[in-house]
Length: 185
Image (tube, rainbow, N blue to C red):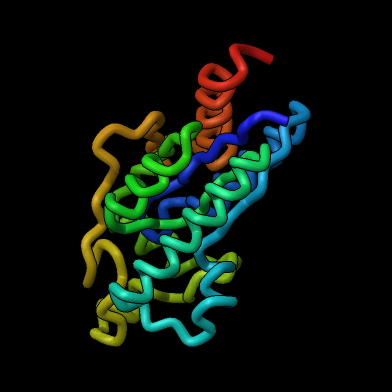
């Protein structure tokens, strides 16, 4: 059993992280590659059932997410992190602790993210209508509005999710995974 790899799919809320991550899992499975999806929203349900999204809470959630990913990769499990990780230091922590690590940045203008979020039916356990609540002053911790979102400085792959469908985005990430860790399939 070799060491697993980890991909952090990052971007603003509404950029497509959850759907792209799930499409990536499907593509990997079609090629006989297994991966575990780690979602910050799923983890929050366990760690912070009534989340405040404070800086301290985010620090704890992202530190736990990275710790779990590190343990899994050390045991040969491939990991896809589906999480905004609004501060670079969260993702840098993963990069420093996980030898086979890469960032996939889903680039999307905040106006498009807001539009998508307003029409979203499936939230994948993310809080609903976050941008609308932020614009009304009811939620001050939304990345890109009340809190900073620091895009990666040197992601291994950047995808414009306005130009690319979730399937196309997942395929682009898959190609980088294969090139980087498998040579070819």
